[in-house]
Image (cartoon, rainbow, N blue to C red; front, side, top):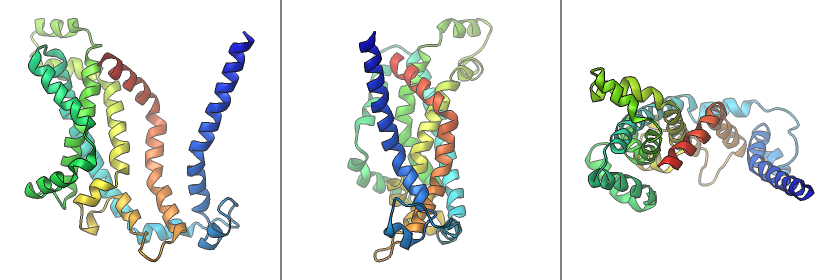
Length: 275
């Protein structure tokens, strides 16, 4: 009994240390976003002598953050909507269709998750340019759908197995076709995994830097991360503005994750275990 309590105490201490280490970068970012450049380089750990709110207003003006926020919202909404639509249909159909062909198609989707993004950058850019997707936030959303749909299919495919087939059989006996059965019976039951897949892709799309950098050239189409990157000059870096911009960029992600984090854990567990 004493040994079990000792192990529990040690695990709690270790996890607490990991939590502090994980939270420390966020704390430092917020703390130093209220300092002047001189205070940051004077002592990065000290408290600000005054709350320099103007760092946030200057960051908003210099990075055109509100315009970039609109572009990021458009890309995120379109990308996530497309991913959820195609992945839910494909995951349901593949899960309910036994056979080698459906197994092969599912394997191809899953195997694409193992391909590093950096290895497909050049062919992706050339393909996007040939399809006139480069240089447009709508084209960027289409690319996000293509890259994000594989993981969502994996989650939907596993989750659908937990839904009893008797529900669909009863719907067919009542005269429902496949599409009506999916939209009225299956789709509402997929809500937990839909929320999970939506949040995971939101975190990825909102914080992504490399793909928008490759696809977007016009500053008017910049996403939040690209706009923040404008503050990093070759010879000048205003860290007080950079940190304020990073805090503003991270606020929506932190709020969304805090509100829906319980769905992420439960959805991944159910989708992955049954997959």
